[in-house]
Length: 511
Image (tube, rainbow, N blue to C red):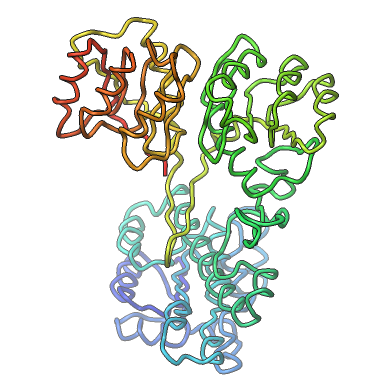
């Protein structure tokens, strides 16, 4: 017979779950109130104290912390582990049903005392959860009552497979991580705000490892730190070769530049200012890509950051030393380029692989009383299809420029507009509160280059005014998602001007 351990605070659905498991040959070990609940459901239960031959201690603070329990859970299904258990008179535990004292709920209770909260910190339940999750290769963890029906159904056939046990283990580790985060946040408040920041997370269980404190955040009165995904890894997965330490704003801008430049399979350069590209270009070499990107908006590029997806050579370095830049990032730098950059001692050089920006990381943003989490936008989904909707089809040259502009616009702050030619931006309008102003901004920055350019918009045009402004400036083709209730009006304006229009069916907001 298989052995299940049950130790739960929330007994929702426990009885029916256990009866289904008992029908498939499970015996149950349980603690105090859980054992009583199972007996009320008509099940035979072995008390943990009787099984371990060790009575509960300290008013119930110590119940399951015993080799008979944790050895039974952690024993692997191969080698000598089972023999060692048998020699000690213990057996393997195949299923752990556990949930934790409701610390988070108690934390929000009016009038709760420090002593009461301390007693709501679960020790044994967390240890059981982690042990079962660690040994997912053999043990099934049920730490969420909402999973009971599915787990019972699986045991009624072949039992949970390895992939399902892994998913249940993941849920266990996520649960204990959140639980510890809530406790750490409360303790940060106990020891004082500043000490709490230094010792812990100030209420938020942050991902990664704290790599270093930053001089300040976006502004000097804000504290900040940098955390890396891999312990010991440098900023943005790279290595700082020269210059001052990277600031909070430097890291943000470099991340935006690397995200942009990583989208291209050929030599590319992106210049970023305040989290939005101000110039993006492809080139025969890095020097040409830089010069073309700079020409798009040399005024905004002053004090910006530059990223390349190819090694930087002396020719490109010589061009860059003529302008004040905060940072340059690239996969590598030639010895000659480093010698030239050395004359700009405050310029930060980051050696990092842009493809790291394509890693499957999720984005987390703090909001009032919570957080937002989403997948990164990595461009159009594979199933997306472009559709020409105008009377005139785009030429091959226009189509090439439209593809380039569409890649760039997804990294520009919304409302976002990009005017471009083949492999080069001419004018970028971003961060505007209405789309026609973004069009006007892009046209102003493009100047005479607007005539004959193509335009990409991260979202549809709600009114014809944006299309009309672009047509007046000489824009020849447009790509945007479509989907507005006024699409017919905007398309009519484009057709009247002889513009080619493509709908992508995909939006690329970036806020």
